[in-house]
Amino acid sequence: MADNDCLFCKIIAGDIPSTKVFESDTTYAFRDINPQADVHVLVVPRTHYEDAEALAGAPGELADVISAGVAVAKREGIEEAGFRLVFNTGEHAGRTVFHAHLHVLGGEQLGMFGRPGH
Image 1 (cartoon, rainbow, N blue to C red):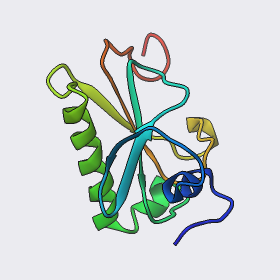
Image 2 (image 1 turned 30 degrees about the vertical axis):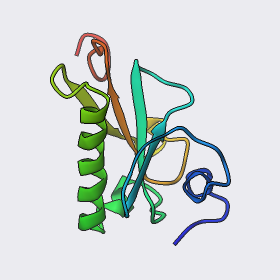
Image 3 (image 1 turned 135 degrees about the vertical axis):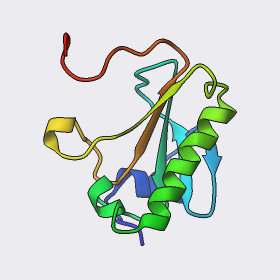
C-alpha cells in the first residue's frame, strides 16, 4: 500500500525520477541525492511503513530490505572493504522522510559513529 503524499512512494511508482541500483519484488534501491559517502544508496520496502519500528512488525519485509542492502553492497563492490547499514528512526536520529529506508554507506573510510570521542 502506498501513501500518495510520500516522496519514496512516488519514487517507487516512477512519478519522481531516481537512479535505480537494485530492485526486487519487495524492495527498491536508488542513489541518495545528497550522498554522505562515496557510495550512498537507499533501500526502501515497496510497501509503505513509516519507519524501522513499523517495518519491524513485518519481519519478512525487514529481512528483504536488509538482504537488498547486502546485495547493493556487493553490486557496488564495497562488501570486502566494509559498509554500513543504517536506519534513522525518530527526530533525534535525523529522519526526514517518513517511509522506512535503509542507508547503505561505503566506498571510503567512514568515521566513527555517534559523538566524537565516544
